[in-house]
Length: 315
Image (cartoon, rainbow, N blue to C red; front, side, top):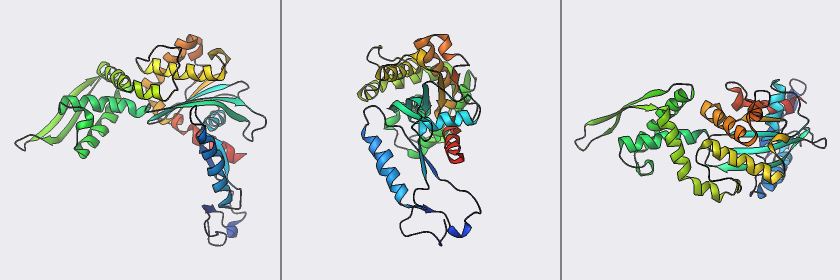
């Protein structure tokens, strides 16, 4: 924005002196209101949008789109699928939050689609895998739970090394070596180094353990299916989330035109395989077939929402 057009209190402004020089259209993506969080509809759709609308210049230049809708628009824009005519399930796996949403065509919406049902599970995402490995390393190195480790710098180094290890295991390695020199000192002030091998089997076991430890937290959020048994691993937990969404909508897996995966946490092949397993448990192999399950390749999976906002701006 420039001084020629910015008024006091404006969040952003288009410089009137540059009129015709370029075309700028701000687009804001916001989470869909989740089951049990009806107040979010007012926070995101009304208060936030109204504030930006009135505090921008020219007034009302900004556009708004729900994140699951943006994901669908991004997938269509990138030719990952054709414009859907039936409901789509969007699974967005972030760092610490996983959401499941049903997106359906809506002629009354400016974007052509709307979120009919959505739910969010806090405490589950790509970082859950990292937490699981850090927990294992803390018990191995410090002989105490991760929560009792007070050395913040050492914990940060453990997290950095664990992210790299999870990425390697997710990429297909059966075993990786975690090496962190000078991680701590002993009672004689001599340096202690961490050098330990971690297998895929160990990581999967730790993931199960951390999910088990968070069961009560997940149950209290009220977003798991009551018709399914308690989730014992990542696959069954995702199955329960999807089933609860379908139960709330009165739908079934076979009514879905596509299933679209989004979010940075979904880059992990472990997460992708768990999603595929969850879908197969609910609707058989055909529900997770390549023509049904859309997995944006590489970094595109975490960029698909942003690309959807670009599609809105281009209209």
